[in-house]
Amino acid sequence: MISNLRVASVQLNAKANKAANITNAKRLTVQAIEKGARFIVLPEAFNFRGDKEVLRANAETIPGPSTKDFEDLAKNYNVTILLGSVIQVIPGQDKLFNTSVLINDDGVIAAQYSKIHLFDVDVEQQQFRESDTFERGAQPVMATVDDVPVGLGICYDLRFPELFRYYSAHGAKIACIPSSFTRPTGQAHWEILVRARAIENLIFVIAPNQVGIGGGGVPTYGNSLIVDPWGHVLARGGDNSEEVLIADLDLYGQQVLRNQFPCLNHRIDIR
Image (cartoon, rainbow, N blue to C red):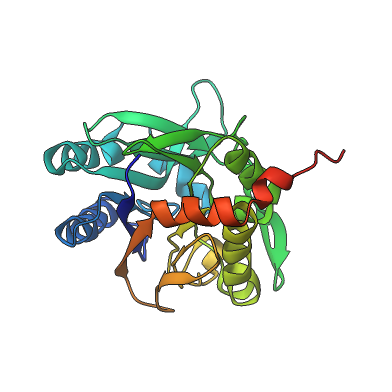
């Protein structure tokens, strides 16, 4: 396994113009590549954000229009790209999947993860019911990036530590949590939860977030993060700006830490 991996967490302000969002995401992905990133992670709903009434009109198959250019980028530049999520058609159903798509450095879709935990909550008198539109994913999904095991999650999954416990128990060194985390919940919990998932599993967490106005007209929080296994913030985005965060993940140091502080070996299955 490699000892160091340069990664990028891309903070976006995706809106209702799908083509413009894809063009913008490609621009920032190229910026990340030019900065030497081998693994680029885009946020949830990187290609489209809008009211649920128009989600179906923008849903697509995987592979599809939103993956094609990134497959080409990954192959041409020999990098791995995680499309934080694509709104995916489910054949024969009215509901949709919210799906992360990992494209490997051969330009091949190597993994797909559909969001397991759906955001059915009330936030500051605003009601969210993702289950009205989406079907929950069936299972955790792991992939590899330069032979490094990676666990995949999306946004609200962050609040469910058992998912990331599963990943660390199955060898994950990195967890990716692309998000469109709201400003009210983000101000209260975003950094605390991201750092907690990293600390309790001794993993790196790459958590790109959206800025600007999300679904239902609620502002999103930004503050994208890359966090190391001790909970140190390696890179942080701003409140409102689109930007590319870069960090070098010291995988050798992670293993040294796990050897010196072997809490993952002390877990007891409590039921």
